[in-house]
Image (cartoon, rainbow, N blue to C red; front, side, top):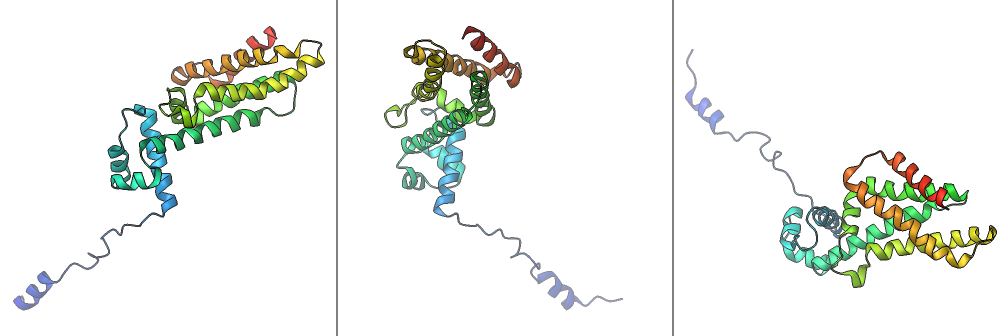
Length: 213
């Protein structure tokens, strides 16, 4: 059977159906979405490499944008870093102080220890950023200042307990710094080793602190 050459030619020359449909259409982000994307990328890079080793060029490249977009949203690397640190500090402070609800003093201690370890487990990148020396500490604070804020919350609770038990409430600030510092430093150590399990770490912290108190 003869093949119609003209028909074959037409079939060969006809463009493939759906070629246009295969072209991916780039969806433009809103300003708020772009800002969140840059914050997520910056958070990851700062956690991995630190502030100094992270560049605006790399942040922009990861986001698929030009450098001016980063400057437009944050004014530069320092501004982006400051927002990341501020968010993480508020997250950790909210988790720890939120755990200091009404209850037996030993339960309060356990809740606070668990809250810090929960933050480390859930927001590992954020904690890595916080425990580094902040190059823009003037505007964002430091991990030490954050721990001091948490200690102030604990100080009020300890002061009331000391007074109720006939102890000098003026010693509450000292004990608050000691207790919070012990949990915070243990948390920094556990960040990398992750052994023993979180519940066991918290239990040992509470036992050590409670028997001492």
